[in-house]
Image 1 (cartoon, rainbow, N blue to C red):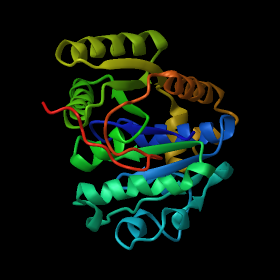
Image 2: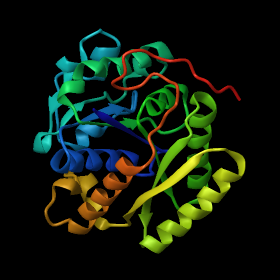
Image 3: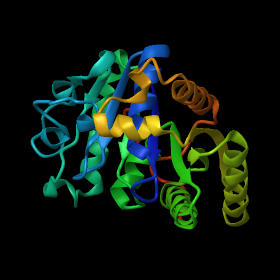
Length: 267
């Protein structure tokens, strides 16, 4: 059965896209066939970081009705992607119905996809929440800044209140050590649990590393660089933890599910 992972963050600059791309590459190499979906509507850059030039993208699916299978593009190491489009103003104000149509379109790919990694837009806008709540694992990227705490909290609040998501995975980015990452997570977790009846699981951290910075400049993800063993090991640990974390049971439109269900929470 195909599994879906949505990578979210409350603000830009948290490393969301880098995590999503590298996670998809590692899953594709170690666990099974993966697809990367760039659902950062209007501000997509995943294809750029993968040095890919797809002929069609998510706009063709959402606006022109092209089957999602026809826009699949082969990226590095056999990873397939559904690319987004940078500066696509027609995608910025999509209604939820069209977003849900995109989610349901992935039903046609279930037999040839083991893992779907979704890079959402930053922030808690409606379409971002629809894309994230549809995944088996709702992952929030947390960074050690005051604004990072507030924005990550807003993502969890939005997922919980708008879609009834009760299980969240947190990945700490740009931490100096495991101890620092765990301490940051535990402080964040206590704040979340004080106000919401949800489960928040620690799913590892990415170290503050020059390799990630250089990878973004050179458009060569660390996941495919043999010299980046520490970073690759951290990514593998994150992937394993996410896949072992509790599955999102929100009653919402889901990837690889035939029919949408009504939300059951109204706060």
